[in-house]
Amino acid sequence: MVPGGETDRPAKREHWASRAGFIMAAAGSAVGLGNVWKFPYMAGENGGGAFVIVYLPIVFTIGISVLLAELIIGRAAQKDPVGAFRMLGRRPWPLVGFMGILAAFLILSFYGVVAGWTLAFAVKMATGVFSVPGADPATIFGAFIGAPLPPLLYAAAFMALTAWVVLGGIGHGIERANLVLMPLLFVILVALVARAVTLPGAMDGLMFFVRPDFSKVTGATFTAALGQAFFSLSVGLGAMITYGSYLDRKQNIGRSATSVVGLDTLAAILAGLVIFPAVFAAGVDPGAGPGLVFVTLPSVFTQMPGGQVFGALFFVLLAIAALTSAVSLLEPVVAFFMDEYGFRRARIAVVTGGAAFLLGIPSSLSMGPWADATLFGKGFLDLLAFVTSSIMLPVGGLLIAVFVGWVMGPRAIAELKGEEATAPALARAWLTILRFVAPLAIAWILVNELISTG
Ligand code: PHE
Image (cartoon, rainbow, N blue to C red; front, side):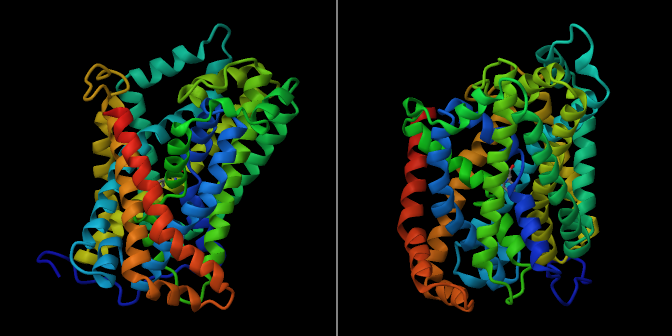
C-alpha cells in the first residue's frame, strides 16, 4: 500500500456475471475503429480479397494464440497487468505490464479524438449537413477537423461516456453496456450490408472484396496484416489480461477466445461488405486510405436513397464500436491504480479519463491548427499512433507470447487443461505458436517496419 492510497478496496474481485457478458465485453473491445474504419481501407489498398486471404490465417493462428495467452495470464493472476506479471514472473516482467498500461493510455488519448469525429459525423448526417446542394464532403471534413474547438468538444463528450461506463464497474458498467451495445452494433451492421448490396452497381464492389488481386500483395501486406490482427484483437497491451482477470475458473476460455476472434473477424468482413459495394455503386475510389470513411462514404450516402438515415446509422455504429473499445483501454489503467495503489474506481476513472482527454488535445490540434508541427515527418496524432500500434503493441505481444510460452510454459498448459473440452493436440500447437511462430513473426514485422520508416 502506498501512502495516500485509499484502503477501501473491495475484499473480493468483481467477476463477469455471465459467459455471454464476458464474450460481449471482449468482442466489444476487439470490434472497434480498427474493424470498421481501418480494415476496409487496408483491404482497399492491398488487393481487396487478397488482403483478407492473408489476414485470416494470421488472425486464427498468431492472433488467437496471443489473445488466449493474455486471458490465461489475467485469469491465473486475478490482477491488473502489472500485478499479474509480478505474481506469475520474476523481476523485469512487470515492466511489460507497465508498458501495456502506458500504451493503453496513449492509444486512448488519440482514439478518443477519432471517436469524437464519429459522434460529430452522426450528428452531421442526421441533420442533413451533407445533403445541402453543393456540399463537398472533403471540405466539410477538412473544415471540421481543422477548427480547434468542435472536435475537442466531441472528444470530451466521448471520453465522458467512456469514463461513465468504466465507473459503473465490471458487471454493472462494462458488461451491461456491452450486452446492449454489441447486439445493437451487429443489427445496424447487417441492416447496412442489406442496404449496400442492393444498390445498383454493388456487384462490382462485392467482386472487388471477394476476388483477390494478388498483384497488390507484397511483403508489406503481411506486415500490415499482422499489425492489423494485433490492433483489431486488442492484444499486446494488457487489455485482455485485465478483462481475463475478471474471469472465474469455471469458464472455458479456449472457446470464449474463439468466439471473440470469430466475432471480430465477422465484423471486419461485414464492414467491408457495407463499404465496398457502396463505394463501387457510387463510382468512387476504394483505395482512398484513411479518408475512406469520413470523406468517401458521406458522398456515397448522399447519393443513395435513404442515405441520410443510413449515413447517420453508419456513424452511430462507428461510435458504438469505438466506445466499447475505448472502455477496454481505460479499464486496464483504472485496474492498475485500483489494484496497485488501492484507489477507488469512481475517482480514478474520472481522473484518468480526464487525463486521456487532455493528452488528446495536441492530437486533435495536430489535424488542424498544428498541422505543420511535425516530428519525423508525422503530426502528433500520427506519431502517437505509429509509436503505439506499430512499436509498443507488437513488442508487447512478442513479450507476452514469450512469457506464456517459455516462462509459464507447462503451467499455462495446465491452466488450459483444466478445461475438459481442450484437445491436447490443440494445446500443444498453441504452445508451439507462442514459443516460436509468434515471436519470430513479430520480430520480423518490427524489423521490416523500422527499415521501411527509418
Ligand atoms: N481493437 C480495437 C479496434 O479494433 C482497438 C483496441 C486496441 C482496443 C487495443 C483496445 C486495446 O479498434
